[in-house]
Image: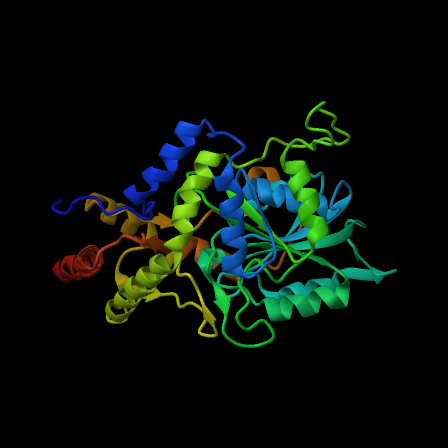
Length: 399
C-alpha cells in the first residue's frame, strides 16, 4: 500500500467559511434563528429558479414534510423506487402510508414503462383516483429519485401524473445542480418540476451544511405549510399556541452559514466532477470488464456519484472482490444500496417486476468522486483498476 487514502466522497470546505461561523458565535445566533437561514433559503431558491425555498433539518425531514403537506396519510400508497437510499422510502411509513416498489431502468432511475404498465394493468381508475387492485388502497403519489444526480425522465412522469391524477414528490437530494437541456423542461432543475422537491446537504452531498435539507415548490401554499410545520407549528410564537402537531425540523443558523458559502461554490464543484468523470471515462473504456455508466446526454447532470459495472467473466473478479482489493490500496468504494424491497421492514410490501435492479445491486460499484479529487488521485484509482485486472490475468495464466 503506497498511496494515501482516497475517500469515496467527502466535503469540499473552505476556511473562508470561518468568517460566517464567527459571526454566528459572536451574535449568539447559532440555533434555529438568524440571518444565514433566510440568506441560504434565498440563494437556493434563486439558484434553482423558484420563488421560495424552506430549509429543514435533513432531506429525510423534507420528504416527510412534503408527503404531509400533500395530504398523504394512513390508508394511502406511494409508488417508490427500490434503487435508492432507504431515507427516500421511510417517510412514507412516517405518515402511515405504504410503499409500492418499482424497478429501475438503465439510468438507475424509476422505470417509467413499468410504472405506466403497473398503473394500467394492476390498478383501477375510479372517480379520478388510482386504486390498487391487490390492496384496494388509493395510490396517491409517486416519489421519484434522481439517483446519483442523474435526472429521471420527468417529461414522461409528468404525463403519467396528469393521466392518473397523481402527486409527484421529487427526491433531488443527490441532484442539486442537475437540469434538463431539452424538451418541455429545458433549463429546469431537478426538484422544481413535480408538486414539491427536496434537496439534502448531508456531509457526502455535493454541497454540505453538515446535515440539512431544503424543500422547494412552485405552490406557495404548500411551502407555507412546510414552513409552519418545520417550526413546531407555532400559531402564536409569543404565547406558544400550537393548533397542530409540528416538528423540530428547522435548520440551525450555524449550519446555514456553511450553506451560504457552499452554494456559491456549487458550479465549480460540478465542473470538477464532470472533468474527473471524463478522465475516468477515457481510461475505463479500455479496461475490459469494466463499464462506467453514463449520465443522460440531454441533461446537465451534477455527476454526484460515478458508477462502474463489473463483469466478473471479463474482468476476472466480481464486484465485492474488487471493493476488497481497492480497500487494500487505501481506495474507498462502495456497492449499490441493498434494494429496499428486500429490507426486513418492507418484505410484505408490493413490488412490481423488479429485474434490472437485481443486476445493478450485484454488479455496481461507486468509485471516488469528491469535488476536491485531484487528477493525480483519479490516475491512481485508474492504475489500480488496471493493476488488479492484470494481476488476475497473470494468476490465471499460471493455471
